[in-house]
Structures are given as structure tokens and as C-alpha cells.
Length: 272
Image (cartoon, rainbow, N blue to C red; front, side, top):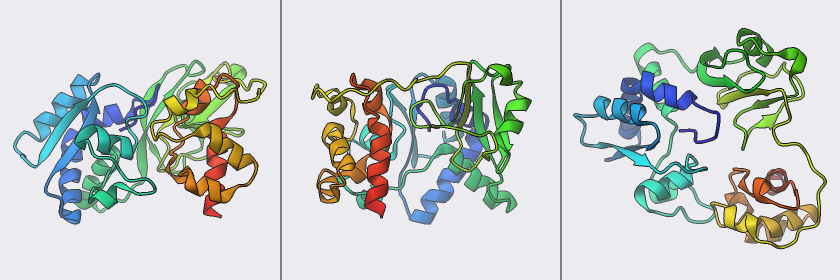
């Protein structure tokens, strides 16, 4: 599930397609030979919890787990820790612990494919923000340009200052509205103001706020220095690849250092 502010598409999928989610989870469990399945839901979504518990009431292999409301708990490594109290090793994946993590919308799509043979051709997307006349959660065909979606939701084009594809923390601001909706598009946020205006960067003061904010216990203060100086080996030894770009470091930095953006650059350097 998505746990970013503004995004409610996964919430609606859980409420409206609970049976499909449970069916898709059963299919996934059969494919990977899992004996137990869990669905983690933030406890501020009681309607979704109730619907999924009802859909899974006769299946003792599936457990619905209410979770504390906390960002970025929707990330797969965070979910493993929150639900099973197990830590994915540095540089590893949940698969290393013989676990597979999938989004609820993915489970619903798998169910639909097995029943109809129709692949993923549309996805639920949240369209909201101060620049949207009628905020909605919509099922949008893959490939639809953003501008068509915004027109449908009566966006105030004359006063739009920023459009973000995704959530406010991990999404990307767009320079053009010709970008299409893709499988990973969870939200389209349109604002009449710049959500996080770029401010003048100051030197790092070693306050440690980014270390405290990082859910993966990384050191963004050191990592951003290694990125800017091209020190690949240090990026590897400081587990740069474990960053999942939640953006917490950037939003806590009093020096306005674009840490999250630099983390993305660092991961790209490792891939090269």
C-alpha cells in the first residue's frame, strides 16, 4: 500500500476490490509456495481493514495486520519489519528471508488476469491538489497523457505552478504534461503553488537530522559528499543501494541540501 500524503488510490482499491485482492494473494502464495500471507494496512483505514477481514474470514493462511500510521512504512523492507519484526539484511531483498512483498493493487490485477486473461491495461490513480477542481481516484488506461487526466478533473491550467507524478515525498515534478500514466503512477498532484520551493543551499552543519530521519539507518550527510566527489567505493561500503528514496532526509535538512536527489544520483552511479 502507499503511505504517502495525498495518495488514496490503494485505499480505494482495498475498499472496492477486497475480494480480488484476497484472490490475487492466494494465487501469489500458490506460485511461490508460501504457507502464510499478510496484508499490512495503516490503522487509520478501518473501512479497508474491515472489508479485507471479511473477504479473508474463512482463510486461516491470510492475516490482516493493522499498522501504526507512519511514513514510509509502505516500503517493502519497512513492511517486513513492521509485520514480522524481521530485518532485511543490508544490500539484500525480502527474498533473502524467503519473503515476497507486493502491492495490493498488484494482487487485484493478478486476480483479474487469471479470471479474464486481460493483462494490466489500467491502474487506480489519485488526482488531487489545490489546482484540481474535482479531486478523484480514477481507473486510468496505461499510456494516457497527464494533460487529458487533468482536463477530466477540471484542473485550473491558468494558475498551475507545479504538477507532480507520484506522491509529494517520492514523486517527480513534471516539465511537460505529455508524460503518460504508467504502471507505477500512483498519483497526479497539481498545485497552484510550488509544494517544496528550491531554497539556497547552505553548507552541511553536521546536525544529524538526516541520520535520525532515515528509516534505513544510512548516513545521508556522508553519502552526499561521496556522490559529489565520485567516490564509488565509499558509496558501496556505506550501503548506498539500500536507500529507497523516501525523501525524509531532504525534508529534514536545515541547510536545504537536496539529499534525496543526490541519493538518486548515487544509486545511478552504482548501476553504471
